[in-house]
Image (cartoon, rainbow, N blue to C red; front, side, top):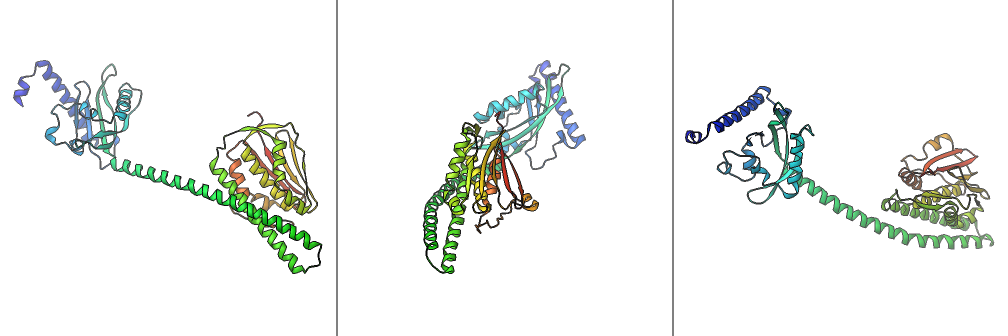
Length: 394
């Protein structure tokens, strides 16, 4: 060792002594404070110290050993390039920029995750955190201290989790498509059952048959309608999962309402209900057509269900508010307050129609993701008004 010192010039000796003094000062501070840089974590690979002026790095040999190197393979006057030369190409510049930002004072701390190639050629992940502990009179960094962790195990676990999530997402999408196909296939036979049962019911009304047979046909019709309603709700649910609620298109409200009304031809005939579309024919709004159709279909379904036979339902628009108005059984305050709760509960309609309670929850979920506001007014035996409010400045 003395022979090496003998070969140094006086200037080099002074610089070496100065560097040693800075390192001793940092180590003394660590011992006095018992917690260098306020890093209380355990299980790490140790602290490191970088003398910026001499570009000497002092570090716990654990990091080099962790990379597969022997102590004898670590240069005596090790500098930061010993590690940065082994950085992953994608991580090199972010690490360098992170350190440059800290040295220049742009960031309060140097903190970064990166990959380093081991001696055997594999990549390991590290979490590194440090800060300048001493600056010169002009603010230039003189000494940096930090701590490093091997986070390879955590990163491997995160990658496995990401793979699992992607796999589950693919399976869920496949299941949703299968589910949607099944619902479509069920809806058509159910519609046929409803139409045929209604035809049988009309024929029986002209014949002298037992009350028991009439009740039997009525039960079939109600059950089929309930199943049909459920399939429509489930199809709406699949639409919620597969479209962007932020999408907006010009929607002609009168036409959209008319299309929804036509879907209820059979139900309207059965209860002898009249639906008036009072929306101005020229009214166009920028909105999500899919959301609007699902909402209107649900509200009209409820209006039909709770309207008295021979009653009237109105679609009305004024000053940015689209209303679906009925004069049916209405709701009391308690029922109104729990209308959009997560508890699926539905009461029988005026013709003892059964519902599933799913639709309102789906509509609420949809409208919360769009620019369409929702409010409901109702009173017992006076009917219900559902209002959809639009931001026409959008």
